[in-house]
Length: 193
Image 1 (tube, rainbow, N blue to C red):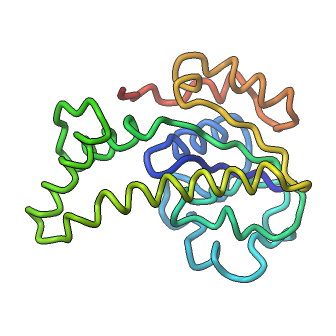
Image 2: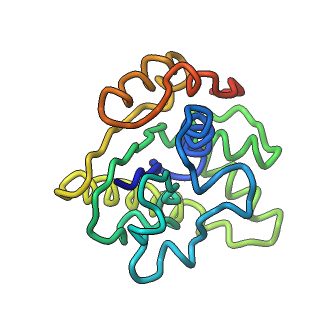
């Protein structure tokens, strides 16, 4: 069994989930230490993930459009897919870029991203197209994972992880994830909305 963590896109909470699973006693091959990351080159290579190398371990399949969620070879998987609404993921991204503005709609997000890209000399028109592409790839990846016979996919809302982590990790344990729910629930609570 290989355990996969992925989600809707960048800033969905997958790193928070990996930290919690690590704290809950699971063997994670991705962590805060960059040198433990399973990179894109390996995720897009043939035969990922190697069943012998990753059996019993948690692998973070980087979120769409960068990750290898659509390229996972046939195997035996348990997947946790973290859902976080796009508006909150992009607001979080803007905060990360030190651009914590009062954005209320996706149109505001797109305008703010365009401004940032324009100021940095980038192609500001591509931002909206890129954001829409990311959302489409996330839906496609989740759809494909959901119909594969070799994947058991749990879809978990980001807000549930933050508001009631013990319940989330207890449910994951009941669904066959070898995790200590109480330890996993002690995740860092640096949550922004």
